[in-house]
Length: 316
View 1 (cartoon, rainbow, N blue to C red):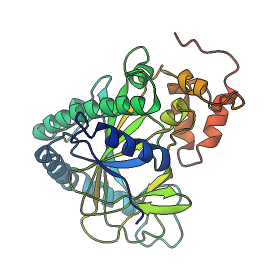
View 2: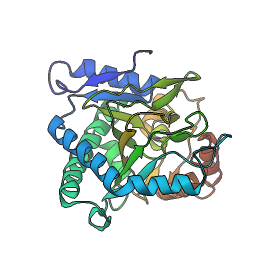
View 3: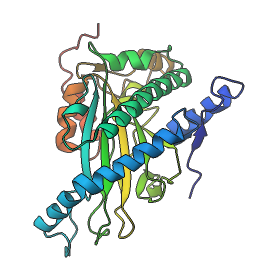
View 4: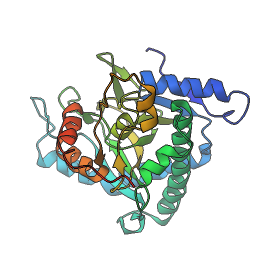
């Protein structure tokens, strides 16, 4: 495996700050993904989240998934399935308004632990956005401010389980896509692999490591950095054996009415002949388009947004 970037944040406020920032910069420019160790979220909390997530799947979701597989006659499938993913998921919204108390079947302990975990991830996401600002030469808080819109960012978690699959060559755990939003923090199973990213035409495994947080960049950061950082295509390969894979992906995204556009400070630094490449749009409009085209290339989405730029958007 090419050296997948694993970065420790342990001395980010000490003597190693510039070296850590350099590693983050390299990962953002060349990978779009990196793995964080010593990120400040306790191993005990992560272990509890993992235990309760797996218990919840077994108790409340496993049977439902088996019934879905049976109803679609997927056990004996002979041809590739391109319109579904071999995953069992539920979504929790944290910001702007949490819906965790409305999700059925979640035990009190699980709700409490997920709330605590989400608060830590939110703080980590904002810290990372400021580190990206520092690397990009943007004023501190710039990305957070852009994401804020008028009412604050959107932040939510997709909890996924990938059960053993009889035909992993014919059904993906999750089809290839880039993430639409801002910055994504993933707590993945450390025993079962499956997540892969596309780098230079090759699918590369994102190594499962205990107590790490995998970070990847969404389409909005590609736009804001005018392509300096790029969102990267990734997928999940289903496995035939084992207990299946757990994945908890938290998405720190712009607010619905946030206006997204290349940072003027980055455009000024570039040569005059390089015109602004990326469009300016309202995040909610992008998400409506993404919902229909998630598993297609991102470039036509950017082009479609550019085509809508006929009337200027107020950025005040």
